Image 1 (cartoon, one colour):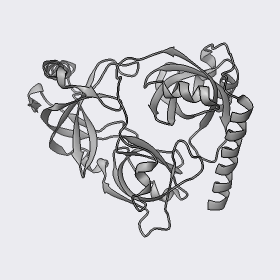
Image 2 (cartoon, helix red, strand yellow):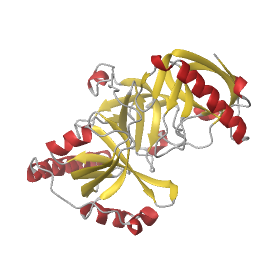
Image 3 (cartoon, helix red, strand yellow):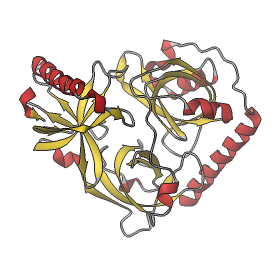
Image 4 (tube, helix red, strand yellow):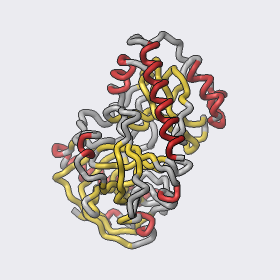
Length: 342
């Protein structure tokens, strides 16, 4: 299984190299059109026809050095969506992908790469930015990948960002970087939640070189260990202290969302501050947080996909809510605005 997987990855990488040579440096012109019926059910064949034809349209899920991920949603079904890793076919597209931001609406034209991972990869030959989002700008990544991983003796501690649908791919937040980890035996990823703090043993894959991929070292005594399972926090009363974070209103959320950046075992996790029982109470909580943010706005800086005020520390008391392995952030359920103290 391992040899077959390595050969398949090498074959895909060779295909990428040949495609880059064939395409050259120019982006082919194409006329981008949105056909709603093509996105119904998010059927692979229909999406592939859009990709190779008039263009596949979605919003940027995340963009980091040498890495971009596109979210495509089903019309009128917001929570039904698919994520695609974007691979540039040439230098011009690589530069264009490097300039996009989270929540930007883009249209891409290219090919569907039938790689061995359950995570779909798209070879992008042309791209058009249809709409930009100005919510978070000016952030510069501090973690250098793969350079910061080469001298760590093959072991790191990070936070689970995502797990592939078949468990063969683990994505980990390491520092402020996002690192894909190839997994041969899904037993190691079974039961993981986004937000789990894990220690894993790894090797650096040479193929593909960009974006950097790791592979789980399944020959180690303990390839992966969960140091803190976020699901164990569910329904637990907690008082947490951290820096105030703001997720500005975007096409994905109806209003500004606030949270606390809390450190656990040296790793940062963001807990969003919510109340689902009473809309008026939730409104009052948001207003209190907005007032605190505005009073201290001069100290706010850009985070990876949020704004954070390192000089504003708050304490929140409530019940932790973690109901899904894919939940973007754990939540603190607050009873009143007074549950937040400065």
